[in-house]
Image (cartoon, rainbow, N blue to C red; front, side):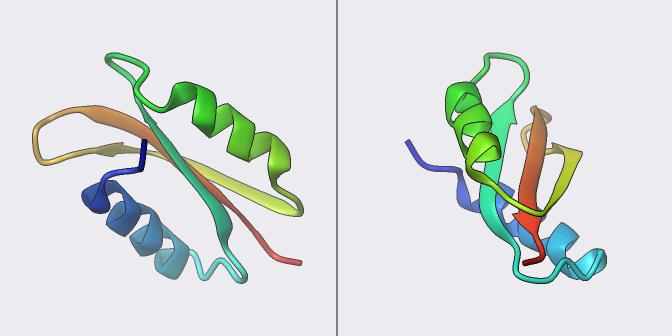
Length: 72
């Protein structure tokens, strides 16, 4: 299962907005049904250095937790 394009774009927007260098381990999960939740926490554990997480509401009104790691 892959993170939907709209959500990847939201993560990339936040990376640019906060000038997060060397961003990787993009992750997200949908709050209402836990879609991608296990992958989210798996990716979080693999990350190093800085960690960024935020909330996002998609075009359908679904709430997501989005995040990444940054810096090296």
